[in-house]
Picture 1 (cartoon, rainbow, N blue to C red):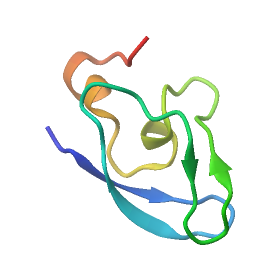
Picture 2 (picture 1 turned 90 degrees about the vertical axis):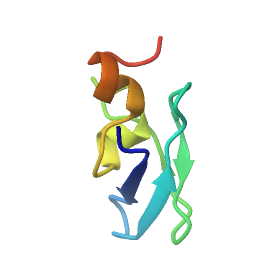
Picture 3 (picture 1 turned 180 degrees about the vertical axis):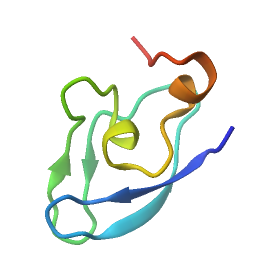
Length: 67
């Protein structure tokens, strides 16, 4: 399982490598460059599944996200 994912801000393109929690989903993330608050896209469970290079650990292991 991969625990690091690169998040890319859709507004400014800033990229940041983040370590994903293994026991929870991250619903919000504030871009460190422009300050935009990222939220999951419709149908995605978390910001890593929407804007990351690697899906969150629950998706990687179970194929389903946190409830």
